[in-house]
Amino acid sequence: MDGETGENVFTLHKDIFISVSRMAGRGGPPVLRGDFGRFGAVPAVMDELLATLKAAAETTRLRLLALCAHGELTVTELTQILGQSQPRVSRHLKLLCDAGLLDRFREGTFAFYRLTERGASAELARVLVDAIPSDDPTLTLDLERLEAIKRTRSEAAASYFRENAARWHEIRSLHVPEREVEEALLRLIPADGIGDLLDIGTGTGRMLEVLGPRARRAVGVDQSREMLSIARTKLEDTALRHCHVRQADMYQLPFPSGSFDAAVVHQVLHFAESPADLLAEAARVLRPGGLLLVVDFAPHALETLRAEHAHRRLGFADAEVAAWCRHCGLDCGPVVHLPGEPLTVSIWPAVRAAKGASPADPSIFSISGAQS
Image (cartoon, rainbow, N blue to C red):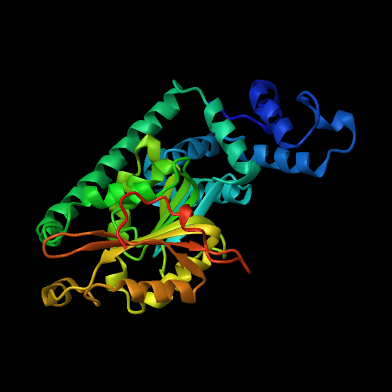
């Protein structure tokens, strides 16, 4: 992979500039220009595209784009793969972020980088990555080193699971198999899928694995870095590249109001200091017509879950959850109850009402076998 100037990129990758021309919104067939100066003033949008291309037109930065297309990576991990100093790698990453080709987000003391997912820059970033020959020897070596890092992640995740397996198995043995819960949740998701999905309290990312294939984009948030590390390992599957995780406070989600088409709160409510506030925050980030799925236990009397597993609440009554949902502008659907021994798992579906709209038509809840 040789270094390329912004001008050379125009002549070497015509497919890129066909996409650039289309993204610029020009009518008619795509127009390719190798030297913009000959044609007089350049439209502002083309100036921006050219600046973005120049940001990528360097060997290390192309390598960074290719690596970040395979998942979320820290500066330390990228430094290990590239064999370059951290300050140098950080400078390249800043240029790519400033150009809108990479997204950067913090998780405690760590910063993660990922190929951007939205807007014209996302399309351009993908075109640039796809234009890199798959048999390029430098890229091949980079990907081999990336796989080694992923194996290390997997080993750490497996170790964490081994240490906690007995504790988790104890709780799972008290209720209906998770497979039945997951199947019930999938029946609530529209057959044609959903747009943007948020998993609040994602933990190991299981809900992203189950529901992610039905979404255009999926984000999981959690406070625990250990859990997020496990989730990232699971999401490295090619079919889940559109899913990612973030460290965040579930009471103060780092998203604008109306950002998601669906949200799930799976076995999280019983840990919450204020379940009502958690549901209000979930409702805030839903778009009008957005679906909220709350999964937790029906009321029970197993004090051991409070004493040994930090459960703050021993289940929830349907009327209690319904009241919280109504208070934050959600229309409640029929509740699904999945009896176990001794715990019953409940699924409370609700829809964010449009401003000034009447209560939701019950037919919008595509529930099979619901029990209210």
